[in-house]
Amino acid sequence: MSALAKALKNRTTESLEGLIHHSDQGVQYASKDYVDCLRAHNIQIRMSRKGNPYDNAFAESFIKTLKVEEVYLNEYKTFEDAFRNIWHFIEKVYNQKRLHSALDYRSPVQFEMEVALNTIASHEKPKKWFNRIHPCYRSS
Image 1 (cartoon, rainbow, N blue to C red):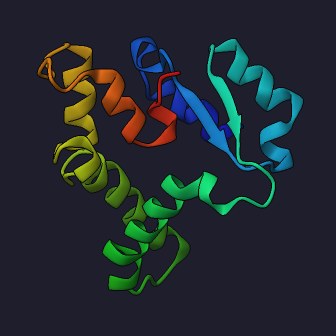
Image 2: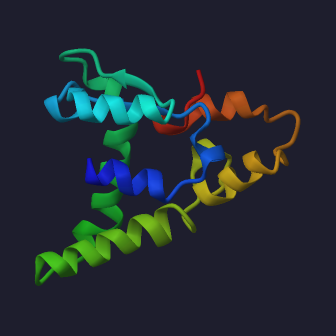
């Protein structure tokens, strides 16, 4: 719940339009409070099918990137050291600087800005892009 609250706090209302929350079938994601919070923000709820690892391919790809580009390259001395470095990688490198092939070699921040400003070229229809990126950004 605290991670969801933090994510919602860090996003604008516009960036929540069409948002899909994709998770596995863990009890934490199916709890009444969690589901109620998602519904209160008009977030569509999608869960992986039982025993189907392909449903979580986007998350698995992200975890691989995190491990290869951050975790395996460092030796953390403390939990706080690991937390600080991983947070920096996700927020400052992965989301703001790292170019993503699924976004036509844009960063997620750049892509979101272009979608918000409607400046993505007409041949790059936003719906097409939404279907190629992380499930949390997919539009139905």
